[in-house]
Length: 344
Image (cartoon, rainbow, N blue to C red):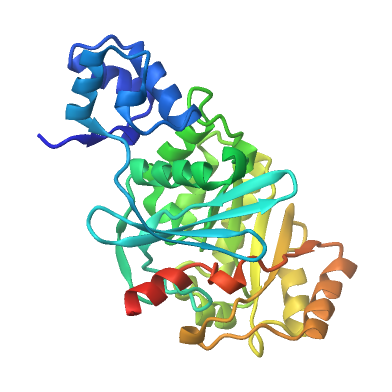
């Protein structure tokens, strides 16, 4: 039997796996500490494990399965990791340092099936879900590639739709949050979704205090369906209703990501439509001038249009931020580096 990815197991499952091969279950906590807290990816370096156990662990499990294909570093110190999976698929992870925090942007799938019009991830189609272990391997590689091994926040905003890979993403989040592993607080973990209503309703009942971010990008169905085909299945009225329910159950606000695209969704009428749509919701809006993506023919609006749009929201007492662009010089927008590499 080939070795298993040890990161596919939470602590309780790893204890059970070890007992199944006649190993004391307390060793699971030691191994978790080596991998997740000390960043050691070689069983031979786990000095408090007996030599016989280290040999057995190498026979039964592996820790690292990725190949680092390319590492790009932006002038603003954003890093992008292009990672090769064992089956030849490619994913991307991004390291975003800012003041007292380091955010890791993680992929949930190889490719994406939702083909959002502002994102390059879906241009080459959907390949497959990532396993829990593959998600966690990204987090570990982000941590060991960041300055001082610092990692404070996780956002599921890389390649793929996190809620479409629900079970593996939620399992990985619980390991990330676990005090025996990375011990990153739930409120420092964000799931971004294109708006899968059944999964949003399911997530509301998980008892988690994570952040939920929703890709909105338009306040009317015609425009949103043009940018995001998923809107045809889950239209705005139903999505907003599900999110109001989510807010009520979790007592957590929702963040709306609004990518501003020149000539499409960035005029003042669009801003007024957004105010109407979100009236009375406990939410905030992130305005994001789109990253230029040649394959999709996208351009950001001008600075004046961006500020006018923002001012409409401010005057209506909508909690709004204007996100600064990071890593454009290394194509840090979702899917850009993978797309370029696969097309070479």
